[in-house]
Length: 213
Image 1 (tube, helix red, strand yellow):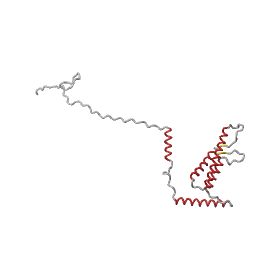
Image 2 (cartoon, rainbow, N blue to C red):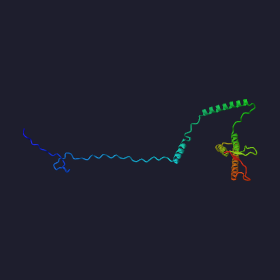
Image 3 (tube, helix red, strand yellow):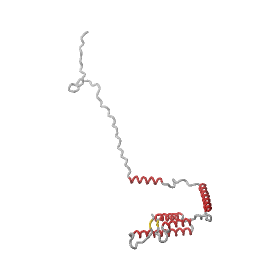
Image 4 (cartoon, rainbow, N blue to C red):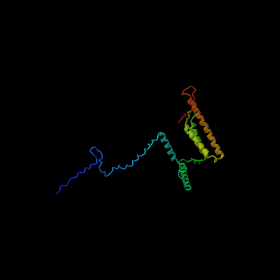
């Protein structure tokens, strides 16, 4: 077998000093990796502010106001048939009650029917009692000032709502009752103010009504 000379090819592409050999064959050029699209960082979100006490109160008031009934949220009124049935049932029950009371109390008269005059008189007497008008002679009147004010305001509302629907006698009764009650209320409040201006037990200190509430 003839001797075949061996040819050694230096396939190294770089010299010992790290430089590219002039006879080196570059098969592939190094290509930079394509840049990956950078992920867009999420935009910072503003922190949700915690509502202050005032804001919470306003929100609660707004919610409460929204829940209050108005004309659109009120339940539908009863029908004419329902109203008539309720009226008949009420009248029948009242008659049976009156019969039972008179049976256990012989000689007792039937309770008079309620009228506008009786309504005004009832509120008038209630306010007088609350202003201390029911005190016995020599006794310190006990005044329910807030209750008297509410009763007077109640009678005022009735007078305003019934304006134009009253007879002359009914209107005169209402205005007279309101005038006397308002003057009595002013008299009591002025007496209480004079009483509070004097120290207790001072000589000549007036004795006046005491406030219940």
